[in-house]
Amino acid sequence: MGSGLPACLGQYVTSAVFGTLELPRLLHPVSAQLASQETSLRGALQLLHERHLTGVGERPEAAALYLEAAFKLHLNWGRLAAAVAVDNARPCNRPTVVQ
Image (cartoon, rainbow, N blue to C red; front, side):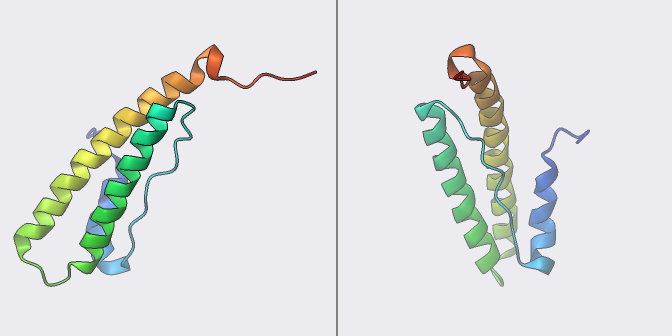
């Protein structure tokens, strides 16, 4: 997206109509450390989604807090995705073909 914002952030606006929020696709990191970070971020996003979807009737400030948290989590997800792409591309992390 030209704004620098992840395209998936629009779902937080439309979730009021559709009642759904999707998690980012799995990154499949080879590194155990990056896999742990992915699990942690997905858990945080899942919790945010559950609270956002069940927060009908909350104070108006709550929506702003959810969006702020979503921005931060998706920014961290983008950084993690870049790190996973670099790490997974290392020769030592590529599968070898057995002949």
